[in-house]
Every structure is written in C-alpha cells, then in structure tokens.
Length: 432
Image 1 (cartoon, rainbow, N blue to C red):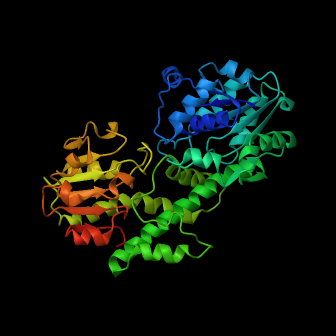
Image 2 (image 1 turned 90 degrees about the vertical axis):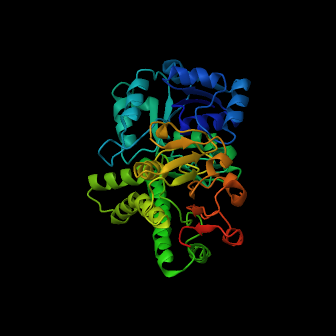
Image 3 (image 1 turned 135 degrees about the vertical axis):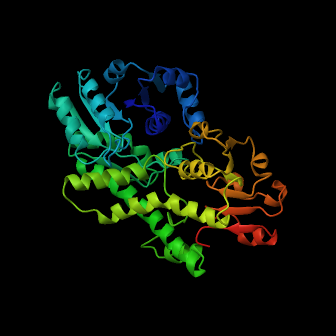
C-alpha cells in the first residue's frame, strides 16, 4: 500500500520504517528540512535500538522516502498517518493539538482522490471529530474518512512492539476503511496480534485509559515501597506476590523513580483535563498525577537522609539520566529535578549515560559529564543509579571507586544486595 507519514518524530519514524519493512511504499514528511536531509544520509534523530539499520535498509530499497513536500506526499498516497506531537499546553493539563489541526488544514487543500486519514498521534476524545470538521470545509465527505489508530510503542522496545503488538486498535465506523486497514495490518495479525475495531472516540480513549492505568500501577507500587522502607519489608517480595495473581500481573510493578518520558506524564494530565471538560470525576488519576509529581521530592529527601543532611561539597555521581534505559529521551526524567536541586545545595555532580552528554545540564554549575563509568565513580561519596541500563547491573563498584566509604543509592533495585553486602559497601535501595 502507499502510505504517507506526517511527522518524523518517535512515532512517525518508527512507524514509517516498520511499515516499509512490511513491503509498503512509505513517504515520511517533515517540515524540518535539516532533519529530512539527515534522514536521507542515514542520520537518525533519536536513539532507538535497531531503528538506524531498519531505516537505512528500507531507504536503500526505495520503499522508504523522506521529503518536506507535503502536497506531493499526499497526492501519491492512499493512507495518511498524522504522527505529530501533542505536548502538554503551558500552564495547563490539556494537550496542545495545534500541530494536528494545522496538518489537517494543510492536507485538506491537497486531497483530490479517496484518502484514509489516520490519527496515530496520541490525541484526546473528539480530536477525530474536529479533524473531520476541518477537512470537510474543503473536501467532500465521500472522498475521505478519519480514523483513530493509536500506537502502543515503548521507547527502547518500539520496533518489537510494532512488529509483535498485543493489539491493533482501529477506531472507525467506515466499513471500507476498516477493511483496508485490516489488510494493511494483516502481517501483524498473522503473527498473533488481536485486531480490534471500535468507534473513533473509543479508540482515542483506549490509548489514554491504557497509559493512565499503567501509570497508576507504577505509582501504586512506589507508594507501597515507601511503606516497605518504614516497615522492614522488601518491596520486590510484594511485587512478586501480587504479580502472581493473574488478575494483576507483575508488569509495571517495579518500584523506582517517578514515571517520565513522552507518554505517561502528558497522557495522565490530558485524560484528566478531558474528563473535566465532560464534567466527569477522575479522582484516582488526579491522585496518581500528584503522587508522581511528589516522587522526586521524596527521593531528594532520601538522598539528604543518606548523606546525613550534609550535601554541600559532597561528590555525587548519577549513573544514567534518561527516564528509562535504551532511549535518549530526557523528558520528565527524575534526573531533571534531582541534579539541579543537589547542585544548588552545593553538591558536585558527575553523571554518565550511554547516550552521551545532555544539553539540559550544560549550564548548571558543578554538574559535569563523564566519558565513562570509571571516571564518573572514581571519587564519588554517593553513587546514584538513576536509570536501569544493563551497563550498570554487573559492575564491580569496589574497583571503580578510590574511596573506601562511598555509598550506593540504587533507585532501580538492579544490584544484588548479597553481592554488595559481601563487598562491604553501604547500600540503599527502593522499598528495601
């Protein structure tokens, strides 16, 4: 099939590469000319395992094309995916949908034959209705249909999640569009993906409800971890014991820092904002948002307690600063709150992350990037494991540090307590 992907951010680029790898002709469009030039050279703007190879392979084959010419891309395609950003509005919980509506307005000038227009960007209830209204001002309704097809891609696992999804959700009452999209996704359905057709509004809400529920699981186990720390109970035992119940399941029951990234923070806010507009109470999600926002403050108090309230001039190392492993995404990472706060109190911060230096810390006093793990840890008073990269799971910390009395604060519980105890290293975990 001939597809147009508008937006070459995380969702658009992964979707475009994967759809082309399934044998479709894909045109990826972006108004950022430099980004398009780089993509043609094989320079990928995001870190995602396997994506660079997939893009290069399909670009070379001719199935994947990059352009800034939206008019040509729309005219050559039968199916148009809108994959632009929907960030949280400033000073609000609502999603900023300006990019989506701008795209809808622009493509309405280029539609001359039958098109299926799909919102793959995470967009709140009624977004599809508004897109349809915008396009119908210039295009006859028989020439297009607007469909919601939310993505469920985890950063760091995106390609696998695309190829082997749990489900494909298609929100449309248009039988023709449903039939065509079922055919488009047939290679994934044949591998076991469940194909679910619902209303357009239903698909929009499924995405938000899913992310809000997963965020709730993370927040729940983080609060249980707080209780565990005060009652001499290991939160990992609680997670395992709960997770063995098939109604609950063990996934997303890992205690740690606040949830971050491009989805959970903005999506929990957006669904809460949507509920307010429809005068519906989402008190659980409201509590989740508040608890998660307070999480980094609690961890900073923990750091202060570990250092016996003596933070000034302490050398503190952060291992990992991205919001999770296998991504370079810094959005709403706990490190963004913790590092500036500790530096402001006079700590000397060194950090190492496999994805390199971060612009967010460049102008902070007493904050330095280390080129490798050893140089980051060699003179640390406190080593904080902030991100669960595999690089950190089997380190011999005793040989890394010159100091004998350094402390480890493992915010991901990735280290073996037995081994750390054997090495006589002072250790703190989460809910341990």
